[in-house]
Length: 327
Image (cartoon, rainbow, N blue to C red; front, side, top):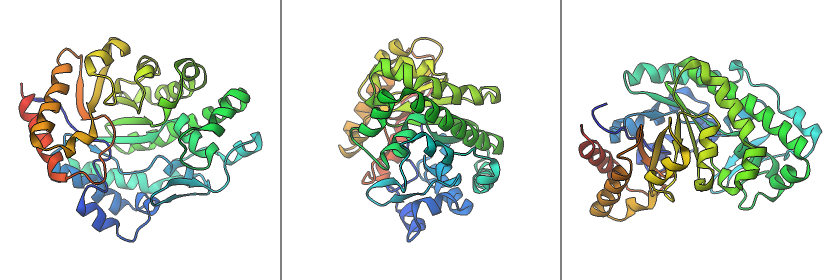
């Protein structure tokens, strides 16, 4: 590529007026199950910002909904699970996911790859730990006391739960790759809540199982979590080709933690976009400078685009990175 590639997490979403317009009156999960809508929403930031990749519009709980888990995404709250998973008997509700459960994914990716041409489409799934957190807590949590209580108090049940979720997640990513996704990203949004020893023992095996399951397709695999500075080496060990870095660790330090053989993705603080053009360009240049010695770098934010971000600030940022990194 003639410049550092750029795409953003949550680039298709509430920061775009055209997104709010097409989603009017349509629930989040419903919008993830309508191929025409998924296609339009996925394409919006590519058209507007000229980003170098589209990210498949979905939600991490879509595969759980598809296998019959009673859940909904409540506006202003997030995913809420009707009956939390707390006992061994509850595991029986987590059946295998098949392509027939998610025909709208296959259809939407087919439509998207035709529209996108040479622009890559990145597939998307939630990692086993983050999915388990929602299932055990019954919704979003700041402390994960129920999930961690199971992890510490019933490690066998916990391991079986994560293993089951790894199989569901791997199946969901395989559907996306077979339909035409050219890379996949595993979001372990809440892994930063864990100490390294607990991550290694209780989470890494399930994440590694997901990455192993899709390794044969030879598409790039990206691994991202928030607040994971202490876990970067372990997240790389789980098997990704690209490790996402949030804004708390500079890239030149992150590469030391991750070790050789991996590219890095990141890591501009999303709130910088509220600070005006000069500040955005100065901070973006700092990211590019700290990435100078990396084996590979994808420019991204250190977390998702915030809903009140000015879309024009994102468009200018893409333009700046393309120009400043031109080789």
